[in-house]
Length: 116
Length: 118
Image 1 (cartoon, chains in turn orange, red):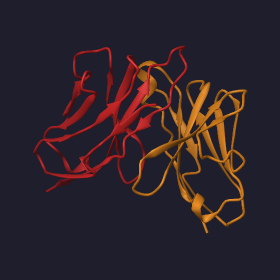
Image 2 (tube, each protein chain N blue to C red; image 1 turned 30 degrees about the horizontal axis):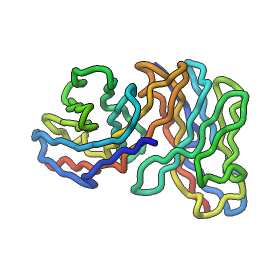
Image 3 (cartoon, chains in turn green, blue; image 1 turned 180 degrees about the vertical axis):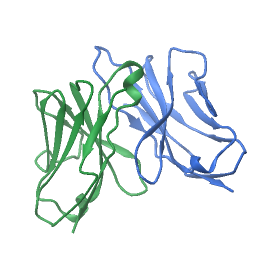
């Protein structure tokens, strides 16, 4: 099946620093990767769509300069939270854009970001 | 735009009993997929069951089954013989059918927290 590896699983950083989160597709090529954010006791909300070789598209209200997305290869998409602030503390999870029966098995394991 | 609604923020069920989680959605699309995901405390998204909108037959996976009513835009999940390990957050999700082979994003409902009581 399709496996998406996401790292790190947990990260604590100081306010003002940047943090990079990686999502790798291990046994398939992911032309598209989706990034979601989940605040405590809430649902997953789409932040942005990452397309290999092109600029990411961001959902309304998501700051593209704060959440930098790079999808330089068919197996790696990265989300960098720049100049992190405590309000950026959240659970971030990626999902590869697969079709057919694989479309449900595409989530990374998530990254819990805490900004102190 | 698509929206997904789950009207039960929390539910509880006795072990070995049956429970039904509700989900309704709104879309103008004709071809799409619907999913139920389980999110335990680890927060890993675990696929429970998947339904293609063009299929009239309700999907089943062991103790899990759905009641898909396309005209009513309803997609409920029934868990039979509930087990303690079923305790988790459950999300209903919608995905448009990809028009050109590329994947589409999920639209999630707000979730239902299910507790299975011993």
